[in-house]
Length: 388
Image (cartoon, rainbow, N blue to C red):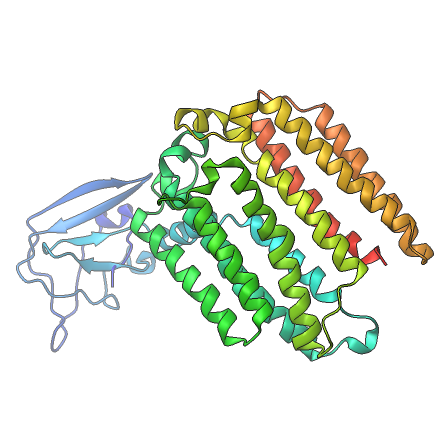
């Protein structure tokens, strides 16, 4: 066990109580040296007359007793390393950032919403609903970590220009740690989907697993992110088809035990989010033009310019919202008609206002707009329940 010790503690005498067996007192210290660890100091003591483990439960001097944190341990060179006690916190934060958590919000909202689409009355509510929801959620969360992670593993050099804050680029995670997270998440995604014995869930995860690999992996015939059309189709299949169809069919057949029936709300959901996913695929590259140019990634934004791609994205989104207004207005339920028409009209208006104020030459502004699109994406999952 390595034990963290604040540097101020070293003004006090260090004592070790005798212990029977493996633990023994520290007899002699020849030298120490200080190395930097970010903005912290690691103090390394070397040259012990015997290389036995210190007992972290023993006294370390009056002023230090209370401040000994979590780690003291010996290296292979007989060095005792005292590290900052927030190292674990930094590691967890790095893993959190590596998983791109904003996409977690989307998948949780999507699964929560689509899980309710097959339900026709309050009598359908039962504990099976919650079981089915978590069966859908768990493998898709692992899938999201895998897809986000494999993209970062193969994009380290590009991200040094486009996204220098990502953990692999900044050094918060090593490449080995990143790869371990990616492959563990991919394995868990497929293993959990198989364990639940639901073909819709399995294929709903397998398809984006394969597409995510093809999108990012720098292997022959793959690396589809450098092929704009295949990249757009991959993302559309992930967000438009796999999640929505997989979760809906799982809930309808394997939770409710009903024959598979494609409803009006499901048809709208798949169509709307497929269009929306195409916009996500196109707009995500708008802030990254400089890096993509430097590394020869021929995205649509590189080939045709930011302005044209942005105009196409805006047109697709307005078309999707227009379809929501038209289909919502055709509903036979007044509340559904009102919510659908007013809701989609409001979102379209907010989109236009934000788009008109956007500076396409500002990478930070275009990245902010991309995140705004995700927020619109989330809101739509509330409106789909009024398409009846």
